[in-house]
Amino acid sequence: MKKVADILSRKGKNITQVSADTSVLDALKIMADQNIGSVVIVEGGQYLGILTERDYSRKVILKGKSSTDTKVEEIMSSDIPRITPSDTVEYCMQLMSDKNIRYLPVFDTETLSGIISINDVVKETILAQQETITQLKDYLHSSM
Image (cartoon, rainbow, N blue to C red; front, side, top):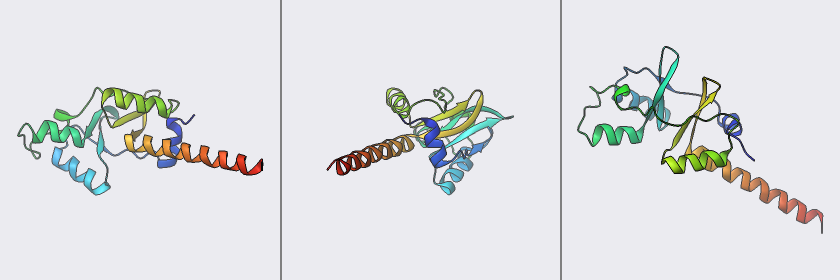
């Protein structure tokens, strides 16, 4: 059974962080430059929340706010469930589905150690299925 640690070892533990007083526009520029859909909000080394493209569209665009005048702390999501490296990929998929979210922060005790996306979970699931198919093919060929 695949774990969150497997995802992090494959993709790396890079975490793009911004401070709470960063403008939404600056955060969006960082996300665009790095081709990512979220940034983590950290202040004084403490995790505060996550800002996603969905937060932007629902809490800035639809409410007529200004991207330059709004700070990320005003629209970030701070109630996203935390996961650990030992959690299973299946658990993460279920959690994301139940909560209708696309990103999960990964904590090793109290330390933020990564972020996984629904895309990461789907890729890991596909890789696991491909491994199973390969093993079954090898088994069938060896028994002939």
